[in-house]
Length: 299
Ligand SMILES: Nc1nc2c(c(=O)[nH]1)N[C@@H](CN(C=O)c1ccc(C(=O)N[C@@H](CCC(=O)O)C(=O)O)cc1)CN2
Image (cartoon, rainbow, N blue to C red; front, side, top):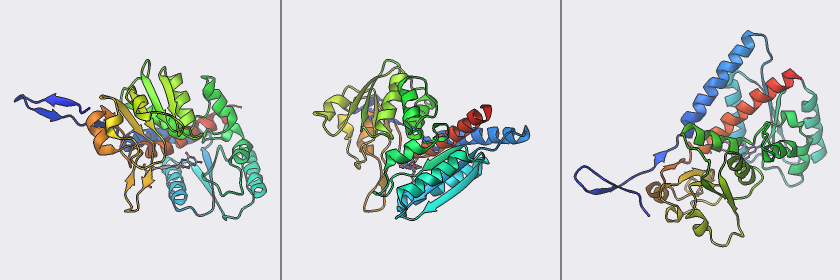
């Protein structure tokens, strides 16, 4: 159902939703991190160091890794890059991680996903010292999030929560529907929303009637990885929509998991793609690296 507003002459006009500007919120967070790094340098504290590991040549991964390295440089972090060939074996990658676990200049370790098929994601994630796991994927960090006592929080879910907070959207008592149950987004964002007081439903490929679930949702987190899968007409009027999907169409255009034009007429607020959740993922990675640095220093 479209949200409508009567204008001054009594005509009804369609009310477009507010755009949640992830680029602007991320820029503010990055500026605050840069300021904190400058203060650390002034008082002789250590400079946060992030190691970024890329295995293979996936073009999208190369772009994301490049953005992470640039973001580190911009806020004054030390950044070390490791670009390994596609046929790297698991033992070599685990040996590199062990070396980085022991390196006192490195406070955060990030292995870009996806990995080539000969390497187990779980083996890699579990090898990273949980105190340096700035992706927040280690079972220790996920367990802390599940226990409502978070340490390093997965970046994209953390970014979604910071966007809600920046726009004054309090999940307490709201019905939230998460579409997608991946380890890196769907599951941890559901834990985040639960911790924030929402009543949370996770929908996935076996969910029987997705439109019926979405019709109840005050907050929708879309993380299915299917271009424009969620129709505007499935949403509850006035819902807040956080679109985590980043899908490149054959035309080269980037779209989210939500049909944006339709959703704008129903939702109260929505994140665009690009410029929504993506920039927050990188800003939250920087935030985690700063926090990891401070925590390691305190040991
Ligand atoms: N180790 C990890 N691997 C992956 C993660 C992750 O959090 N940790 N997430 C994704 C990719 N990702 C970060 O790595 C990521 C994706 C997109 C963006 C982003 O800023 N997107 C822009 C558009 C960029 C474009 O033009 O392609 C936007 O949405 O505005 C940042 C980070 C999978 N792997």
